[in-house]
Image (cartoon, rainbow, N blue to C red; front, side, top):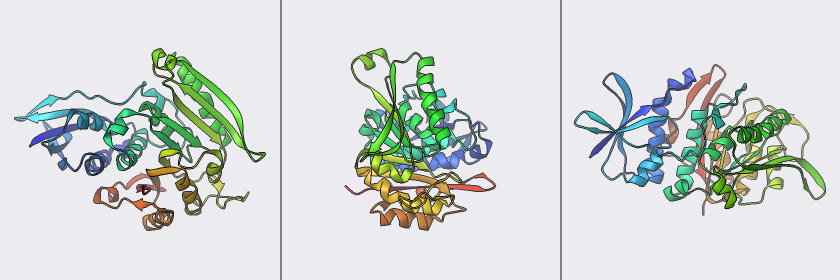
Length: 345
């Protein structure tokens, strides 16, 4: 059986770096279980030449499988281990753009980029077959998108990203960033701002950007979309059509104000009430077979309570061992975990 060794990418976030190997090991296990028919075994951390690696074994990994694993969130380099020697393997990532698309924006409360990628990856692995992940055309929705880290990671993969954000400053910052970044990279694009209305009522402002990685793609109409709407997440169902998205991925905010009760003007800082009210709305926007991935602060909402909310909305929560080992410390007030649930076909 062939052994592989993965060198972990260094993280600018020192707190996250302490748990990166464990997180990456569970990410590999999720990929194996849901996207690769369980072909990966014996995932563990070890030292080779005094350097820490993640090693795993498989005797059936194909070129397609390696292309999938090339997108692991913390992967820096991948090797085949042959007689105690490391043979570098070509890493063919999905990334269409320079990585500063996800890293250049810096602001208080930004979710770590590696964790954002991990959350998107494990949600995709649960919902989509490998060829769909690698083939593009995936639509991702972040119902509390902040300044668009999840949307930008979706764009990196060649997917379409859609978001809702209630904070006007975050909406304006992201609406300004994307066209400016595309212009700086000399990528052809169009950007349109408009009002969103339903039944004569204004729901919020929308910015929609269409673009392509090359002039040839743009000319041929092979366009990607990034779209953000400045409204409350509970109104997402009024903004987007039912069953519009393959994946819903979000990092539940730890103090951002959203309406806690539909059609109420009152705002709350209680994330549990926000999630309880929002999950049924989000579920309506998810295609059959799609998945929701949510990260949240375990200090304010218990995992069992969040799982019950997802199940009450008709979703099947992923409950295998790797999904119970993503919990990690962010700071003194935030202990973050993730949960993934799939909508039946």
